[in-house]
Length: 312
Ligand code: FAQ
Figure 1 (cartoon, rainbow, N blue to C red):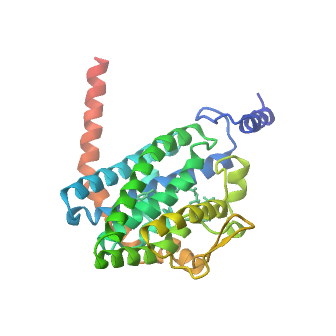
Figure 2: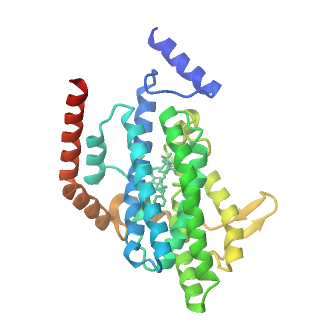
Figure 3: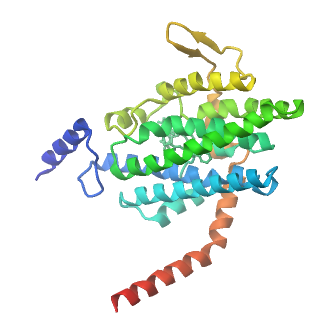
């Protein structure tokens, strides 16, 4: 089959809603786009363990500690499924990790903000996981098979995470006045960074056109951001918390809320490495990678020995 036919078959599969699988022919630019997005997603899961990991030793009860431990562990697992999906496109795990550790690869801007109080753990679960799910539900139907299958499992776990966060927010918002004030303070600090998670506005999103054309993304950054706001307003009302946006208003015509855009200058600065915690996050990942060298060596040795025993 010549290249033209390969391309036709690729397009036919996309149109028919079939998955593209690792052994299928795919345009180089599609492969590169996927490696970029899936690896950034994997890095986000792994770096995302840090802000919450910060509170494991200070969780306010044994139950809260167990739940948070399980959640953070899940995020590590999500990173592994996603690295494996990226590897199926022909890039090695070492190269992927090197890109993260040297600061070459991006990860979600949201994880460059600090977790100052226990209410921040609630806000991350409720808002950050809520935004992550909003984006990831569409990715369950993404066109690349291994990415789609990873997302199905991840989404199931993320919905538990979102409920964990909302439960913390309920405890705080319906608790003592000091707890409610902490919940409101967390909401004030996490609202706009959460809106940034969906990416730049469509008018400034260079990757969206191809992503939509190739059915990698099914909806645009702005569509998902709008849906997230519509859903979250009612949840905030139930908690008695105020969304820090004086312009937030129901718009009957569009059947959605009008809302203020986040500060896109701040967003650009954070993704260029200048957010409040970028340097700490990369230093923590580099330290963990260095200190984990003996585990990787032992695992490689064990797998070599097991393979030799199985071959004998
Ligand atoms: N942060 O042209 P677009 C989680 C970059 S969920 C940093 O619109 P695209 C779970 C973008 O990469 C969080 N960079 O790009 C969890 C591009 O740069 P490049 C992760 C961002 O790809 C919860 C440039 O800006 N979720 O971790 C961000 O079409 C709690 C132009 O942007 C995913 O990764 C950002 N927020 O749309 C874990 C979902 N936004 O590469 C622990 C999969 C944009 O050209 C605790 N990814 N950029 O140099 C996606 O859906 C997409 O990649 C978007 C961006 C929507 C993130």
